[in-house]
Image (cartoon, rainbow, N blue to C red):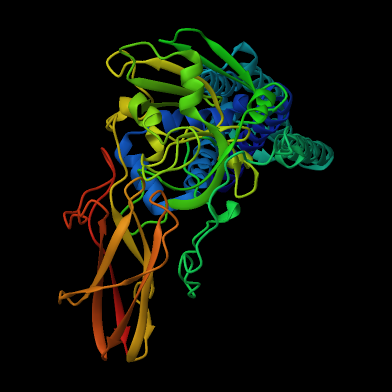
Length: 526
């Protein structure tokens, strides 16, 4: 009897899982029509990201890297599966309990969707459609379980004789539910995965101001050393989006408002008609730990932001540009940093201007990096400068409005700290005794790298040979030839910027304004 009851309970749990799968599949298919942000898993995931404490976010970024979103979605699906199984167990005992559980599922989904900025009533339709489909599936599946098992004195017994036909019917209902879930989910995912925009169809005009040719010797071309120019496909991506915004350049506009003399609204076509500036600029994410790889160097193409702000007329007292993105992200940038670039006509000793970028490494911006337009401000961490999918610039004050990350404890002013990294040899590598090449990159955007030093086993500091400089706004490669003796050794690196300031050895985490400390690696020499 215990075994039979266990089988019945297992069948109920399976019914719940199938009903949950139908809910997600139908919701995914509906979201392909109404909009990706309405998909329940996406909505719950993005709501969870917004509600997660900063230390937990930093832990996820550090330990999961670019797979942090995959880890989040996997966790959500596991929780949903467990919840669905419990609903199924309850439903085979009393259908009303199972339907109440589905109602709770729908309520969580609706609450998650409505908590996201920029959503509308239409965005709750996928959750409601999924819940309705799941209710129908739950009714049919529970009825199927009861058809396959008959009650006799409170004991579940397998139906026999003519009732075996009911068992087959019950199995067919379960298979049908699985097919509906897989079909709807697969089709919905395929439709959502099809980008509504194609950056490759955009033809960018030639820049009015071209970037200087990359100097010979800027890239040392050593095995394992980060290349001077980061390919688009390998450029780091850190954001809060489970589904990337899909913006059409035909309908995209940028609005400039707030404390301005006159509001402006600029189309993508307007941008491309303006004189474009090309610039090599290194970006760094504030989540980059010491020795981390959340940074990259690219050749950007765009319109100088200072000129756009001058057209709007910045009013006295405005000290912040609050940029808003299509995904609801807000980022705060000091007005003085944007306006304090080189004068019209090109880069100077002050570095490159802040840009409203439309191109990256000779191509239109990839969708993952902000197509059709994003902000690039040399010298500032991305969370206060590098707004992707930007749609609005509001001139305001830091006292009046706070952006997404500053609301969560990050500093509102965050110049990139001078840092350096050892790329080769890799941590815990084994190398042969004799001359060993130690190499890496160093960066101090908008200041420039003047020197890099390397120390072995806490010994004296040795000057590394610097690669040719591509400008103060880009990182710089370095190498040091080490006469390595057998044993276990620790290598450390530090950089000095062009003001003469050497990076601090004091370790600090990313919060509130970027990590600091000396990168080190341990190697075995044989």
